[in-house]
Image (cartoon, rainbow, N blue to C red; front, side, top):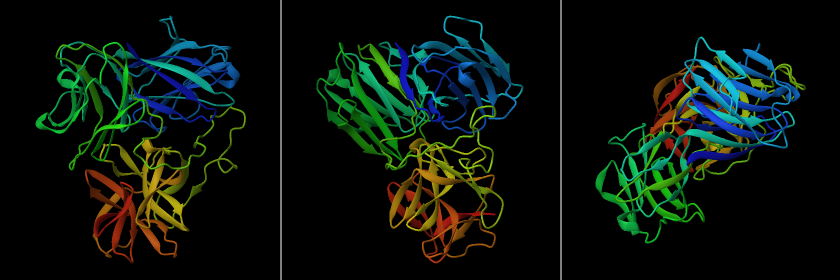
Length: 463
């Protein structure tokens, strides 16, 4: 059975991303105009990026664009190519720098462009806008049916969760790993093992198992059973996908980054899978945060495109020293050329961000997969759906201890009392996390796991 995802896109031009494991994606879309497909290296709307806009300009033409720049690489007339009353099928392919799109059932693309400087594509995003909402049925080429062979089939994951359905008599096996293959660093989840009597969590292919729970009758050979696996900073949770009840849970004190999942069955079991590893900007383990309109630069030629400085365009706020500017963003969006300050324990990049809270402007971290930035204040981690991202700034970090902040440290904000705050980062539990340096306290505070944590030894960002 193919991996089919049903996706709804509102009229907001905000891409929703999912990972791909091959050079083609097939989909059906129902929309009156502007079915946009993005090809990127990561799960965010940032450069480098290919955009294939199908049925734009009032459903009259289609284009291929790279890095949101004009003129478009290719532009063709496609009147009536999409329809708001019925699904239309398409495919998008990328191979050796050639990006193309075609209609379902047709092998010849209706639009194509060869990039002389291609980049590897790992994610696909879809969105609609300019008065259009869309309903999508997205199908990846890879299938996830598993024979009785105990061999994992691997695919990439975009964020800290994997939702799937399994139909089989027993022995549903799922692994999480830092690469597309079996290796020493792996988490394994065996659901309905031992003739459908118990389930376990296994770490790095070693026994004894970290968790063992009785789960009699968990699997069924005649119907799909739904599950959800979540991971964040070493915390692993297996849930019943129907009611959210926790089946198993374990915390790894030394977590490793997870980039891929694998599925298999064995010991006499053949499995059928429906797997959802679709990225929609949130993870259930993350604190909730308000959402806001997406940051988006309308393409030239569309009605209502706002020039720089016009109300509705994202303002740039110059910092009080050094290079770089702060750009408004929201809902997990990353501005091109944003400064990467570290990485989450899952391996996801963390961007230097700041947000207002309780009268202060606080430096913190942007976690795109959570759809928000986090700032530390008052002993807690606070999620912010609206924030600013440091763009085009420095990326020179200097070790510091206590109050010994060197001259030329990059200013990041100020406390509610008006004290200047700087941008720092700390290595903690497998992550490199950015936060605020408060000189009068002699520590760097980071937002982490719902808390504000202070560290006397840290690195500070220099201008």
